[in-house]
Length: 167
Image (cartoon, rainbow, N blue to C red; front, side, top):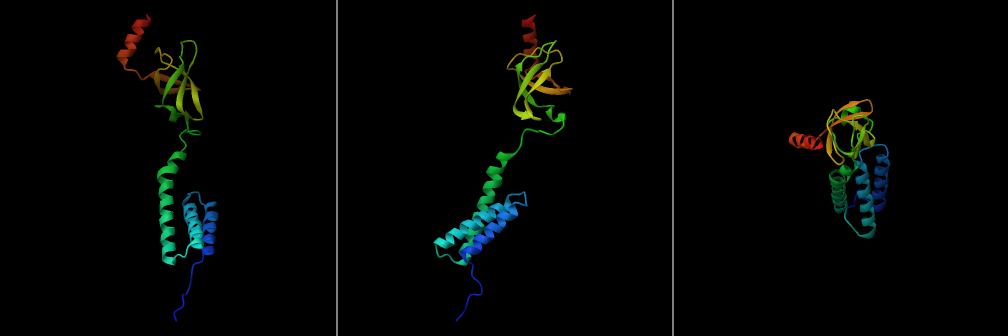
């Protein structure tokens, strides 16, 4: 009579799952979280159904791989911080926004960005002599103090026609 040397019980999977979840608290990658979740699911399945050890391991590997792929492909990209908060002011140069208050020669205007940049969605702005209207798309070309220097993204021929109409 041949005796099995070892057998994996459902509580083994449960303990493995919780150990992996505890490890996740100290490792910031979210990798062991998914292996732990898969182990807990395998524990539940083995309590409900008589599953051989090889099938248990295959289920654990497949679930772990599926969880990892879903995490890295779909969920993690949603959590990327696009605000650029805490970075130097040079990250603003080249960004595009929309004028909400047009800059005048005697006062600054306001440009709004679709995503907050360096902690704010709206910034004070000035131009280098261009006339820019509300709703016009602009690009940041420089920073002076706390104000952005912006220029219009419209083609130059459109700007020339606009200036001719304003005179």
